[in-house]
Amino acid sequence: MNSIEKEYFDKLQEDRTAIADTMEKFAVRDLQEIVINQSAGKAQFIYDLIKNADDMFAEKVKFVLEKERLVFVHNGLKSFLVTDPANEQKALEDKTLGKVNALTAVTKLYPSFQSVFNYTTAPCIYAPNIMFKIERLIVPVLLDSDLDERYHDETMFVISFDKDPVKAYNEIYEAFRKFNYQSALNKVKKIEFEYDNNSVSYKAGDKIKRTGYPDSRLIPAELRKNSIAVEITGTRPGIYFLVPYEGKLKNFTENRPTSMMIPQIRGSKERMVPVSAFPDDYILYITMDNFKRYEDGLLDAEVLELRENTGTI
Image (cartoon, one colour):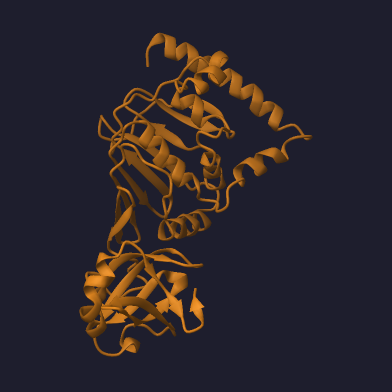
């Protein structure tokens, strides 16, 4: 950070502190909770972290969920700049607004980032050219030291769970399981998640496709390596794991599945492929015989339909 950026940072800190002071007054202090919880789903900030990395020309991003913190790292090429707070509106319109400014403001650029304050009092950002944390929702504060685990060319966000670690872990864990990125990505090509002995990645393209291992708590280890990520449409859409198995399903799970069907066209006829579904866990069990019989159709389709006997779920 050069001398001009340091001057801008000090001005930005002064500006945001004045706003934070106002927001903590009795008449408007509830606005903080409204801002923090403005998104549907409290862990929506993970999508803004990906968007920020994409804006920084990162090609790879990675989330590591631990019991006491979440780490997000990317290999962005652009510097984490701070711009003159006196000209933020024009800079936003010109698409030159500094990322330090953007993350310390409630804007449409990163509309859900403040949901991170459900879990931490101060997210920390370690970039090649600047290290700072954000306090009181919008106030940037410089950090004195770097992280030993950060490579010199990486940008790393560290969200310490200093409010309710168990709640934070569970809600972010659930957000990872239901991850579904709809916005366009310009530079990011790979999104990785590590949590609870899982390693799951998404390759970006026209559609983001999921690969890797599913949740070890939900699918037995002997079945995980053959599990396949598939996109399901309907009223319960999402990325599911299709899990082939041999023998009796009760040997692998004690839970009671819902009997469902995946339609497949064979010749001119529609065939129904039976699956044992756990929609809440995004898991579909299929016998190995049926999987081999319909493998091409199940794996070649970009999207699969899941039906009950009474219609599409």
